[in-house]
Each structure stands twice: as structure tokens, then as C-alpha cells.
Length: 248
Image (cartoon, rainbow, N blue to C red; front, side, top):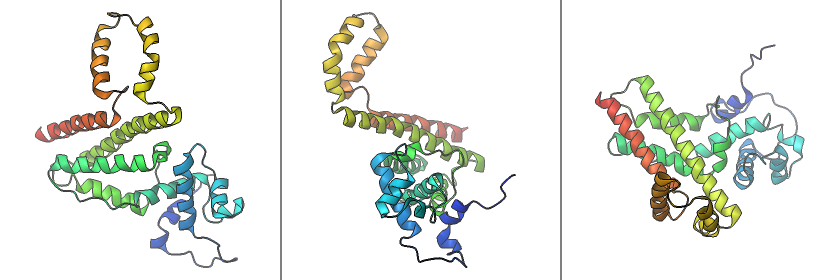
């Protein structure tokens, strides 16, 4: 049967606005919903979402596993609460300058957030929960575009495009950092160790274009790539497109 009940997580997200539900009974809670959410964030920061579990959150709080379910309905719901929590942990910076500068501010705010909490990139977001902090974020992002001359639908599309691009670029950056940390070897050292093998399978002239471009890139980056630089380059081209749309 189709569930027509309001989403419990939505009510928890807006708990400060809606107030504590009346008529609840039982012993006094040992911790608060806020503490459960913060414990979840700490576990995710340390271990990532694949290893995230309600038991680890319970252990961190000194609670029995089933006790955690008296605060939040389940794992996915807790993750939804955690996402809104970290979105609100830093104030949105002022939107100064022209449209290009404002959108750059929006993109880098998200870029920094993904690097503080890489697990955000692992969250299923096809139907995101709408919380107070995510609502304030969307309002702030739209304010960066308001008055530029775009339709309301185009404003929404620009925000979505900017978010998708930033998330994809941050994923590459976070993965590169994690690879270097887990392997204990830098890109430059990896190339030095494996260069003899590559020279045997890639003789001079075998791949003329990639050889030329790859050599230039390698000398510039001293690594396989430079995710930060690539993000900045791509962001500039994306903003070129927004300006071209406005010019039309």
C-alpha cells in the first residue's frame, strides 16, 4: 500500500521550527538528536559512508544500538540529517562583485565543503531531503544570479549545473588525495618507479599526440594531473557559457 504519511526525516530536519512533538512518553533521553547527528558526522568524516553504520554511531555515544533508532528512523535518514548539518556549519560568504565573481564564490564554497567532508560525494541525492540549511543554501545560490537576466528555470539550471560540475571535480580531487595517502607514494615518485616499464611499452613516436601533450602536462604538474587547476579551468569555461547565454 502506498505510504501517505509525512516523511519522519523531514520533520526531524525542521525540528527547531516545528518544535518537539507533544505527548511523547518514556524515560528521559540520554542524548539529543543533535548529538546523534554530530556523532554520525564524526564517524563519516573518519571512515566514509561505505563503512558508516548505526552501530558505530551508537558506540561513539555510548548507547545500545536499538537506542539510536529512538532518535532517528534509520541509517539513510540519519545521513540526510547529517548532510543538512554540515551544510549549515559555515556561514555563506558575501556575494560581491559581478556575476562571474559571485558564481565563482558559490562554486568554491561547495568545493571547500566537499574537501572538509568527502563523504558528501557518496550520498545518494536523487531525492534530497529539504532541510533548513539546504533551503538557505539554495536561496543564497539563487541570489548570486538574481537580476542577471535569466529566467527562473534558467536560474535553477545554472545552480544545478554548477553543483554537478563542482561535485564531479571534487570527486577527482578527493580520490587523488586518498590514493596518495593510502599508497604512501606521491605521483612524482610513482612515475619515477614505473618510467622504465612505460618506456618499454611506449617507444618514442608510438603515441605522438599524447606523448607531446602528456609530457608538457607532466612537466607542468609534476604529477598525473592537477585536480585543483583543472577545476579552476573548467569553472572558467562553464562561466564563459553562462555569459554567452546572457549575451544572446
